[in-house]
Length: 248
Image (cartoon, rainbow, N blue to C red; front, side):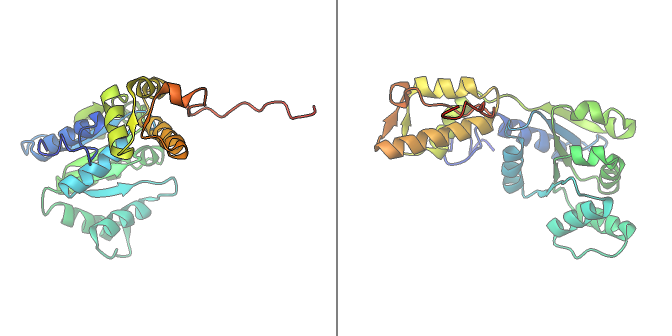
Protein backbone atom coordinates (compact mmCIF):
# COMPACT_ATOMS: atom_id res chain seq x y z
CA UNK A 1 0.00 0.00 0.00
CA UNK A 2 2.82 2.41 0.76
CA UNK A 3 3.85 2.29 -2.90
CA UNK A 4 0.73 4.14 -4.00
CA UNK A 5 0.28 6.66 -1.20
CA UNK A 6 2.02 9.43 -3.10
CA UNK A 7 0.33 8.74 -6.43
CA UNK A 8 -1.74 11.76 -7.44
CA UNK A 9 -3.63 9.63 -9.99
CA UNK A 10 -5.38 7.51 -7.37
CA UNK A 11 -7.52 8.05 -4.27
CA UNK A 12 -4.96 6.12 -2.21
CA UNK A 13 -3.82 9.08 -0.05
CA UNK A 14 -7.34 9.96 1.11
CA UNK A 15 -7.86 9.55 4.84
CA UNK A 16 -10.80 7.13 4.63
CA UNK A 17 -9.15 5.04 1.92
CA UNK A 18 -6.21 4.45 4.23
CA UNK A 19 -8.50 3.65 7.17
CA UNK A 20 -10.49 1.17 5.09
CA UNK A 21 -7.39 -0.53 3.76
CA UNK A 22 -5.82 -0.81 7.19
CA UNK A 23 -8.98 -2.38 8.62
CA UNK A 24 -9.28 -4.93 5.85
CA UNK A 25 -5.61 -5.83 5.94
CA UNK A 26 -5.85 -6.35 9.70
CA UNK A 27 -8.74 -8.78 9.16
CA UNK A 28 -6.87 -10.57 6.38
CA UNK A 29 -3.69 -10.93 8.44
CA UNK A 30 -5.37 -11.79 11.75
CA UNK A 31 -4.54 -14.89 13.77
CA UNK A 32 -7.05 -17.61 12.92
CA UNK A 33 -8.50 -17.65 16.45
CA UNK A 34 -9.60 -14.01 16.07
CA UNK A 35 -12.86 -12.84 14.47
CA UNK A 36 -12.70 -11.46 10.94
CA UNK A 37 -15.63 -9.05 10.73
CA UNK A 38 -14.84 -5.35 10.35
CA UNK A 39 -17.32 -2.47 10.49
CA UNK A 40 -16.57 0.77 8.61
CA UNK A 41 -19.20 3.42 9.29
CA UNK A 42 -19.93 7.11 8.97
CA UNK A 43 -22.28 9.73 7.52
CA UNK A 44 -23.37 9.66 3.90
CA UNK A 45 -20.97 11.36 1.51
CA UNK A 46 -17.84 10.86 3.59
CA UNK A 47 -16.18 8.64 0.99
CA UNK A 48 -16.79 5.17 2.43
CA UNK A 49 -17.89 3.61 -0.85
CA UNK A 50 -14.98 5.20 -2.71
CA UNK A 51 -12.66 3.71 -0.11
CA UNK A 52 -14.32 0.33 -0.56
CA UNK A 53 -13.95 0.60 -4.33
CA UNK A 54 -10.22 1.21 -3.95
CA UNK A 55 -9.88 -1.75 -1.56
CA UNK A 56 -11.88 -3.91 -3.96
CA UNK A 57 -9.45 -3.22 -6.80
CA UNK A 58 -6.27 -3.17 -4.74
CA UNK A 59 -6.95 -6.37 -2.80
CA UNK A 60 -8.94 -8.28 -5.41
CA UNK A 61 -11.88 -8.44 -3.01
CA UNK A 62 -15.47 -9.44 -3.67
CA UNK A 63 -17.91 -6.53 -3.47
CA UNK A 64 -21.68 -6.43 -2.99
CA UNK A 65 -23.78 -3.30 -2.68
CA UNK A 66 -27.00 -4.02 -0.81
CA UNK A 67 -30.35 -2.61 -1.89
CA UNK A 68 -33.64 -1.95 -0.17
CA UNK A 69 -35.24 -4.68 -2.30
CA UNK A 70 -32.91 -7.46 -1.13
CA UNK A 71 -34.30 -10.65 0.30
CA UNK A 72 -32.02 -13.38 1.67
CA UNK A 73 -32.15 -15.14 -1.67
CA UNK A 74 -31.45 -11.94 -3.62
CA UNK A 75 -28.50 -11.13 -1.37
CA UNK A 76 -26.95 -14.56 -1.85
CA UNK A 77 -27.63 -14.39 -5.58
CA UNK A 78 -25.80 -11.05 -5.76
CA UNK A 79 -22.77 -12.54 -4.01
CA UNK A 80 -22.78 -15.53 -6.35
CA UNK A 81 -22.96 -13.16 -9.31
CA UNK A 82 -19.85 -11.42 -7.97
CA UNK A 83 -18.19 -14.81 -7.52
CA UNK A 84 -19.08 -15.76 -11.11
CA UNK A 85 -21.13 -18.79 -10.08
CA UNK A 86 -24.66 -19.63 -11.35
CA UNK A 87 -26.96 -19.85 -8.31
CA UNK A 88 -28.73 -23.04 -7.38
CA UNK A 89 -32.46 -22.98 -6.59
CA UNK A 90 -32.72 -22.98 -2.81
CA UNK A 91 -31.37 -20.52 -0.25
CA UNK A 92 -29.66 -23.38 1.56
CA UNK A 93 -27.83 -24.52 -1.56
CA UNK A 94 -26.89 -20.96 -2.52
CA UNK A 95 -25.50 -20.40 0.96
CA UNK A 96 -23.33 -23.51 0.64
CA UNK A 97 -22.09 -22.29 -2.76
CA UNK A 98 -20.99 -18.97 -1.27
CA UNK A 99 -19.16 -20.35 1.74
CA UNK A 100 -17.43 -22.98 -0.38
CA UNK A 101 -15.82 -20.30 -2.56
CA UNK A 102 -15.17 -17.79 0.23
CA UNK A 103 -13.59 -20.53 2.30
CA UNK A 104 -11.08 -21.46 -0.39
CA UNK A 105 -8.80 -18.50 0.22
CA UNK A 106 -8.35 -15.28 2.13
CA UNK A 107 -10.18 -13.00 -0.31
CA UNK A 108 -12.27 -10.47 1.64
CA UNK A 109 -15.96 -9.85 1.07
CA UNK A 110 -17.04 -6.20 1.14
CA UNK A 111 -20.70 -5.59 1.96
CA UNK A 112 -21.69 -2.00 1.22
CA UNK A 113 -24.94 -0.39 2.44
CA UNK A 114 -25.10 -2.92 5.28
CA UNK A 115 -27.91 -0.94 6.91
CA UNK A 116 -30.36 -2.48 4.45
CA UNK A 117 -29.52 -5.96 5.74
CA UNK A 118 -29.82 -4.81 9.34
CA UNK A 119 -33.23 -3.26 8.73
CA UNK A 120 -34.43 -6.54 7.20
CA UNK A 121 -33.11 -8.73 10.04
CA UNK A 122 -30.49 -10.39 7.81
CA UNK A 123 -27.55 -9.81 10.13
CA UNK A 124 -27.32 -13.45 11.20
CA UNK A 125 -26.99 -14.48 7.56
CA UNK A 126 -23.82 -12.38 7.30
CA UNK A 127 -22.51 -13.93 10.51
CA UNK A 128 -23.25 -17.40 9.14
CA UNK A 129 -21.31 -16.58 5.97
CA UNK A 130 -18.32 -15.57 8.05
CA UNK A 131 -18.55 -18.55 10.38
CA UNK A 132 -18.89 -20.95 7.47
CA UNK A 133 -16.01 -19.52 5.44
CA UNK A 134 -13.79 -17.62 7.92
CA UNK A 135 -13.22 -15.11 5.10
CA UNK A 136 -12.63 -11.49 6.14
CA UNK A 137 -15.84 -9.46 5.83
CA UNK A 138 -15.99 -5.66 5.72
CA UNK A 139 -19.42 -4.24 6.54
CA UNK A 140 -19.96 -0.63 5.47
CA UNK A 141 -22.83 1.49 6.70
CA UNK A 142 -24.11 4.75 8.06
CA UNK A 143 -23.16 6.48 11.29
CA UNK A 144 -25.72 4.58 13.37
CA UNK A 145 -24.67 1.11 12.18
CA UNK A 146 -22.75 0.10 15.36
CA UNK A 147 -25.75 0.95 17.53
CA UNK A 148 -28.04 -1.04 15.26
CA UNK A 149 -25.74 -4.05 15.34
CA UNK A 150 -25.64 -4.08 19.14
CA UNK A 151 -29.03 -5.81 18.98
CA UNK A 152 -27.35 -8.92 17.55
CA UNK A 153 -24.98 -9.97 20.31
CA UNK A 154 -23.47 -12.93 18.46
CA UNK A 155 -22.64 -10.75 15.46
CA UNK A 156 -21.51 -7.80 17.56
CA UNK A 157 -19.10 -10.01 19.50
CA UNK A 158 -17.36 -11.11 16.31
CA UNK A 159 -16.31 -7.65 15.19
CA UNK A 160 -12.53 -7.44 15.04
CA UNK A 161 -12.44 -3.69 14.47
CA UNK A 162 -14.87 -0.77 14.51
CA UNK A 163 -13.58 1.90 12.13
CA UNK A 164 -15.32 5.28 12.08
CA UNK A 165 -14.88 7.19 8.85
CA UNK A 166 -13.32 10.61 9.30
CA UNK A 167 -14.53 13.91 7.90
CA UNK A 168 -12.75 15.15 4.80
CA UNK A 169 -9.54 17.00 5.62
CA UNK A 170 -8.02 19.96 3.81
CA UNK A 171 -5.27 17.60 2.63
CA UNK A 172 -7.99 15.33 1.22
CA UNK A 173 -9.60 18.29 -0.55
CA UNK A 174 -6.24 19.29 -2.00
CA UNK A 175 -5.66 15.79 -3.32
CA UNK A 176 -9.17 15.62 -4.80
CA UNK A 177 -8.51 18.92 -6.57
CA UNK A 178 -5.27 17.55 -8.04
CA UNK A 179 -7.01 14.34 -9.01
CA UNK A 180 -10.19 15.68 -10.60
CA UNK A 181 -9.10 19.17 -11.72
CA UNK A 182 -5.76 18.33 -13.27
CA UNK A 183 -4.27 21.29 -15.10
CA UNK A 184 -6.25 23.83 -13.10
CA UNK A 185 -4.69 25.67 -10.17
CA UNK A 186 -7.30 26.05 -7.43
CA UNK A 187 -5.84 28.61 -5.08
CA UNK A 188 -5.64 28.00 -1.37
CA UNK A 189 -8.29 30.54 -0.35
CA UNK A 190 -10.90 28.95 -2.61
CA UNK A 191 -9.93 25.43 -1.59
CA UNK A 192 -10.22 26.34 2.10
CA UNK A 193 -13.69 27.75 1.48
CA UNK A 194 -14.75 24.59 -0.33
CA UNK A 195 -13.41 22.45 2.50
CA UNK A 196 -15.11 24.53 5.18
CA UNK A 197 -18.48 24.36 3.41
CA UNK A 198 -18.25 20.58 2.96
CA UNK A 199 -19.17 19.88 6.60
CA UNK A 200 -17.07 16.72 6.48
CA UNK A 201 -18.42 15.42 3.17
CA UNK A 202 -15.95 14.42 0.47
CA UNK A 203 -18.87 14.27 -1.95
CA UNK A 204 -19.63 17.96 -1.41
CA UNK A 205 -15.99 18.79 -2.02
CA UNK A 206 -16.14 16.94 -5.34
CA UNK A 207 -19.37 18.67 -6.40
CA UNK A 208 -17.91 22.11 -5.68
CA UNK A 209 -14.67 21.24 -7.45
CA UNK A 210 -16.73 20.36 -10.51
CA UNK A 211 -18.49 23.74 -10.30
CA UNK A 212 -15.16 25.53 -10.00
CA UNK A 213 -13.68 23.65 -12.93
CA UNK A 214 -16.74 24.47 -15.06
CA UNK A 215 -16.47 28.17 -14.21
CA UNK A 216 -12.74 28.22 -14.95
CA UNK A 217 -13.30 26.51 -18.28
CA UNK A 218 -15.97 29.05 -19.27
CA UNK A 219 -13.57 31.90 -18.52
CA UNK A 220 -10.52 30.24 -20.01
CA UNK A 221 -8.68 30.36 -16.69
CA UNK A 222 -5.73 28.17 -15.71
CA UNK A 223 -5.98 29.28 -12.07
CA UNK A 224 -8.91 30.32 -9.91
CA UNK A 225 -9.33 31.68 -6.39
CA UNK A 226 -11.98 33.52 -4.41
CA UNK A 227 -11.41 36.72 -6.40
CA UNK A 228 -12.22 35.00 -9.68
CA UNK A 229 -15.07 33.02 -8.15
CA UNK A 230 -16.72 36.19 -6.89
CA UNK A 231 -20.16 35.95 -5.30
CA UNK A 232 -21.23 32.75 -7.03
CA UNK A 233 -22.98 30.17 -4.93
CA UNK A 234 -21.38 26.97 -3.66
CA UNK A 235 -23.06 23.61 -3.29
CA UNK A 236 -23.93 22.94 0.36
CA UNK A 237 -26.37 20.07 0.01
CA UNK A 238 -29.32 22.26 0.97
CA UNK A 239 -32.14 22.87 -1.47
CA UNK A 240 -32.48 26.55 -2.36
CA UNK A 241 -35.42 28.44 -0.92
CA UNK A 242 -38.08 29.28 -3.43
CA UNK A 243 -38.01 33.02 -4.10
CA UNK A 244 -40.93 35.23 -4.90
CA UNK A 245 -42.09 34.90 -8.46
CA UNK A 246 -41.69 37.89 -10.73
CA UNK A 247 -44.70 40.16 -10.83
CA UNK A 248 -46.12 38.88 -7.53
